[in-house]
Length: 559
Image 1 (cartoon, one colour):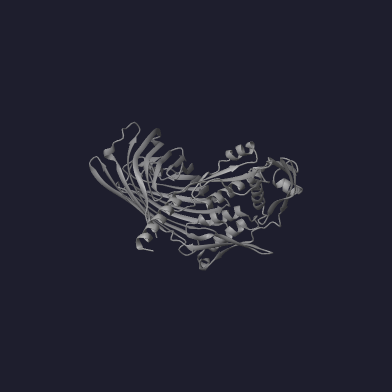
Image 2 (cartoon, rainbow, N blue to C red):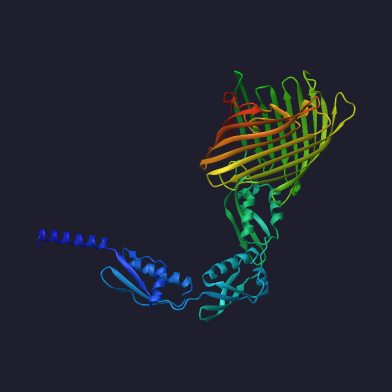
């Protein structure tokens, strides 16, 4: 054969092959009657296909769909080729099963399913869902290896009668939680003891396993390498968690620049928090703050949880506040807390404050000593995911009763102190959320002195005002933000702060209100959380002046 003929044959072959590849096939499924064909058409099967293999796959899928809705005795016939592009499949649907009546002979199962009698009627398409839900319900009650199936099935036209056969085996309870790998020696023994105490003899199921997973995710100083695993033997049920130590220490600080009446001022603070550095679950905080008006604050605190592997912890604080050359307050606190099982704790404590007047230029400032016995409650619900910027929910309440003795008086005055803090983070969706921080304070006393009042205002309080520039014996502040997440590591937000407070000067009480408005953003970097905000504030009926705005910078660094 000459080369020209070979090339011609190759060209013809390529054209035919291209035509074959471009050809489209059509599937037609018909029933044993016109009525069955209408039912088949209502099931919306795919009619156009690129090849015969696709047709066979879709026929199989159609038969499964028909079986699922109750056509359990479908008869099929050979796939016929009507012409070059059309294939026809004939089937006989038969009578459809519409519902099934189950008999449940086991009284315990009847109780678990919350049934009033030993029979239940179920639409046939829902039987698979019912069996899955039944197994999940049995698992929730400790029967983790339960099985459910139907037996003694009898057909009566469009109805099935069957008996629910359940193999529950025995219930399992958690015996111990074990930390695997080398991180066991670095995990606080007190934490592990309390977690084991919380879950020991609890029914073992998927729900309790998820609760254990969440329990360890709430700890700031560890990461879980994988989801908890379990080992079930004849006598014991063990849960294994795989942990690695995480650097949960933080360094937080910000610098604020303000322009008030053509005066440039600089303020800032330093906040260092150390956690589990000696593998005891301890928390150490060192805090220092200085604003542009000669106010200085120093605070050091130490918290030790689970003393002697018990639910009891201890906390001690030292706080020093100095107002320029006017006065200095030194406050010491000692408290005990008892950790409850629901991520909350109750507290009891004692605190004492000594105030010394350095230079008295205000008749309402005088030296004093006070002491309070306090009780409190705290609850926190943290986000259990990466790159979260705030707790989901936090509630902290403190009630104190005590006495205060002023230098110019010989008899102490009884006082009551109440402080309530709330944080609520509402997620609308993955992009939009609202963050609300509410802080309430009240000091009850016959008379007040300026240097004992609650001080607020600033970046972590009402924004748009200088740090600690406001004082009151009663205050209620709402710190709100609308947040929009551009990515999972960057969000922008509005600032809308509102506060009501009462002051008392020379026994004259005055009601005040203030607002702070502005914009800001937060960015989760490799090393921590960067926040920048610009806000302006106004007191009572004053107009918000943007030229008096305060720029706040904060960078919370993890190390």
